[in-house]
Image (cartoon, rainbow, N blue to C red):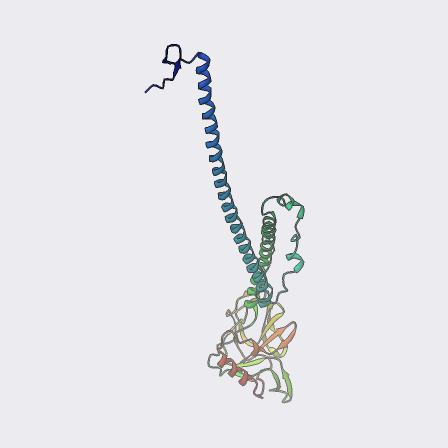
Length: 322
């Protein structure tokens, strides 16, 4: 229904319809417009307040979640540092100790670990800046620890390869087949000389065996001498490196030549009765840094603990050398 205004006319004693002028219409319209604007402002202000409050609440939740995640990351970095320190400890006190190597130098592990504090200045004024700087410093420390540990393991690897060569070179088997342990005739130490009949230092071990019994290299090395050596008769000398040499005396024939590379277990000659010998046997000596030492200490590679004990017992008997 159309909204019509009426005004009482005293002259005509009647109500007459009030018609708005042009400016009146504009005025009325402006009232509506102002009211709409005010209402819109009120609605927008209320909505903005609620939206801002919602955004602030969500931002606070995200910040809290972010801080928690950063704290978890910081703890994880601490665990990584603990693992690296444990690896370093094992490297110095186990891996290197096994190979008789010195610990990795501490000054090499600490190279560059001080860092440059200036590069972290830009993070001081950001939110959680102290935590961010702490994490970045730990990441840098981990990177440097990994780099130094990698270099240390490279050294250990090279040491291992060298030690593998040394382990293969060390004389560690009996020079003839002696599984039943019956061929040991005389051990290392003071023994009665078979010819001079006086006590004399016996610098090796004697193995009785028929002429022609195979003689084997007891470790990897290079044949240094093949030929006659005074009372030793026909002799083979092998240089194993690392200060080790072995001598095989009283041979009948050779199966190697000077300068030849041999491996542990290779056939190098045959048992004989040459030189100052009272019967077919092999006289075997082990040298360490030019000094003769007891060969019985080097039969660990082809004997069980029980057999090894028996060999020690047999070789220590006060028998006459051959």
